[in-house]
Length: 123
Image (cartoon, rainbow, N blue to C red; front, side):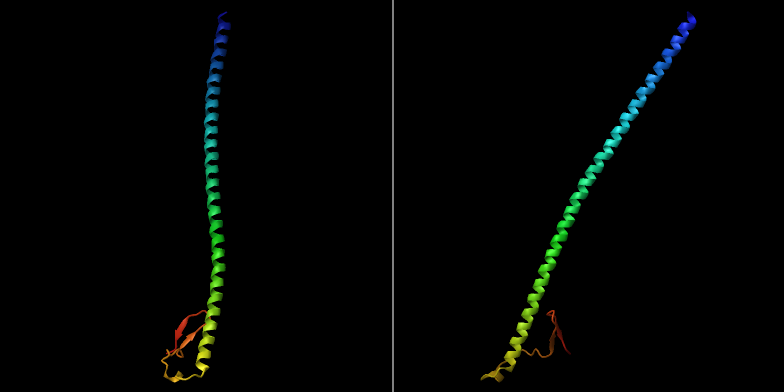
């Protein structure tokens, strides 16, 4: 019976070691699962952050496009105003009226205005 008892004790030791190994394996799998979940959660947070950044960039882009349209409209209005002003000055210079020669008018003949409205002096 002693041999049978020894085999039983050996089998019990093997089962105990296997149970401890299984418990350790189960703990490692659980720990790894927690790490994977942490990575997944971090990636989801990063994805949300990237989405918010993309929305902000799209809004900035839209506003920039709107500002470009407004800038073009303002430029067109400025060019039209400049052309009207040139016509007024031209008509004023060509008009004949009493006392015209006695008026003190700023001499604009030495200034060149380009279509963008910049004023450049000829020296």
